[in-house]
Amino acid sequence: MSITVSAGSIKGKERKEIIEIVQKQIKEAALQASRQVIMACLEAEVTAKLGREKGVRRKPSEQPLEIDWKCGHCGCQNAHQFMRDGHYQRTLETKLGHIEHLQIPMLECQNCHRDVICKFSILDKFQRFWVDMHQDAFFSSGLGQSLRAIRNRWSGELEDSVGLRTINELINQIEPLIHKMREQHFPEAPVVVQCDGIWVTIQSQGEETKKDSRQRKRHERSGKKMVILVALGFWPDGQREILDWQVAKSEDHTEWEPFLTRLVKRGIGAKQGLSMIVRDGCGGLGKALIKVYGNSILDQRCIFHKLQNVADKARTDLKGEDRREVKKELLEQAASIYDAEDAETARQRLHAWAEYWRPQAPGAVATLERDFEDTLSYYQLDTITREWMRTTSLLERTNRELRRKFRQAVTFGSMTGADVAVFLQVQRLHTRWTDSSWWQVSHNLYFEVHP
Image (cartoon, rainbow, N blue to C red; front, side, top):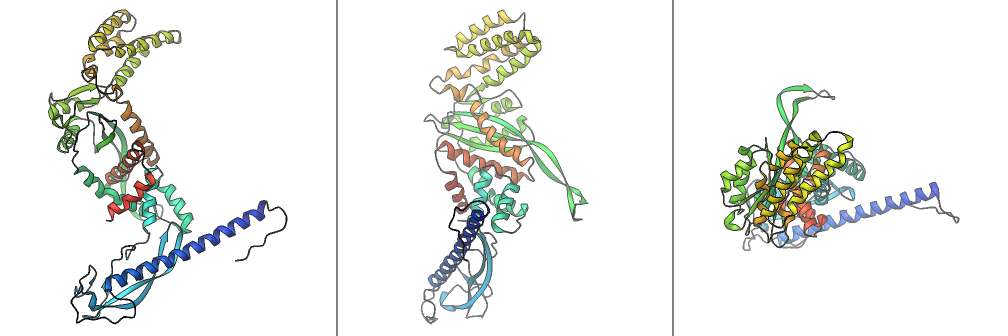
């Protein structure tokens, strides 16, 4: 393709046309080169499997050469009984674009003269999208891109439409890795674990059907609020890791108990080094902790949530704009209680604070005094960073990353979709905390799913 360039300054429409032509030529050249490389690799793999170059006569009388390719009819796996049988053409979608007229080698079994099932290492027989598209789906979803955003980009790159369900199925290939992760045992338990729940909407399918905009019959779907239970662990050397998560119906103790039991089975227990679990006061986590761990670990109530509850009560006790500074002073003094060097000093500060503020804000005082001892457990672990123990703030920051994905998705079509979305976000967060590359980690996920 020729390009006409004027001698003067190239601007505006002329510059745009030149750049578009160059981009098109680069894409065409890249696709052609990719096509040649892929076909060369396929031919090389056939040669390696057969043990002979193209054009060399086979030697069926020699010692059998067993390979992992086999005849689809008689099951023969002796490469000496296989011979090249031409090619068939197919297309392939890649990040570079749409590749046409790929020549795929074929083999014939000389025992029964039927086709040999060739499982190429770089290309599956019915695979529409090549490896790089799968990797891009993991990478993009982990960055929080929606299915629609990925579809719009892919449709532009491939110059053809791509379905949302197709992309969703590619991403959901990750599911086996979740089961594999939950079977792994921690060699050393974290010292502190923070636990919390995040509420999301997950769709369920009913039995009744209705017609959609294209007059197709579809089962009616309805959204249901569910909670994702999350556990974040901290080790003495500064390592942090999301240990596990579970999609549950509620934060009741009956949901937390199996989740905590699974953590114990994976090595998150007092004997392995766990000293404390930090939680807020909601749900049945406290009851579940007693049933699963008993008195073997410390139970720390989150100070941030406790002070937040105090602030809520203070707004009721101290109404009016003219009392804003008074409320601010009350909360600052309440927060300073936890700056004490030891638990006894904190108790003394609470007593003085309560005596002063009780006449003005009885609700706020009663809220802080309630279960106050449960917020002082961290003083028993003075060798551990207090930021890990006093509050679930680090887990809250982690949850914000997860919520960003949940808000973008609005609702998940299945439990699997929610699980996979959390898994990818967890992997991305782990790469950030370990200064790794999410691009590299997400690309490696493909080879874990397809070893």
